[in-house]
Length: 77
Image 1 (cartoon, helix red, strand yellow):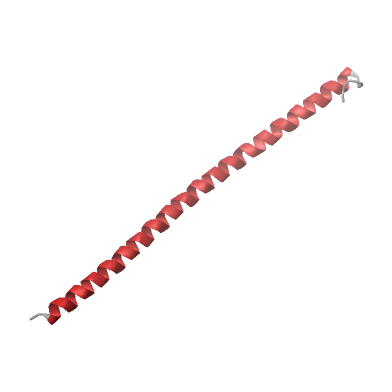
Image 2 (image 1 turned 180 degrees about the vertical axis):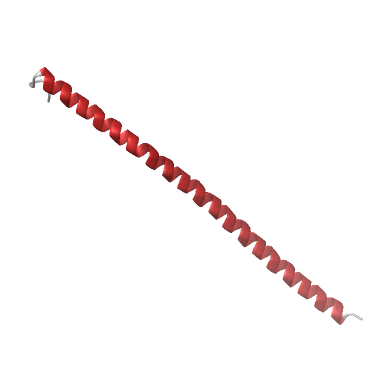
């Protein structure tokens, strides 16, 4: 593509291609870092929600068990 062009244009074309590639890499680097950070944050939030749900379920189970035990002991003299 650049073979028929003068040397100066070949150098300018190659420099522009390398600069374009470098700019794209520099722009994608921070974006990928932010996406990784967001994914880690979402994973931490999911773990927190799972722990909260498990705690709530255990609390509900223990409340039911306590209620059943109190009824059982109130029936027996």
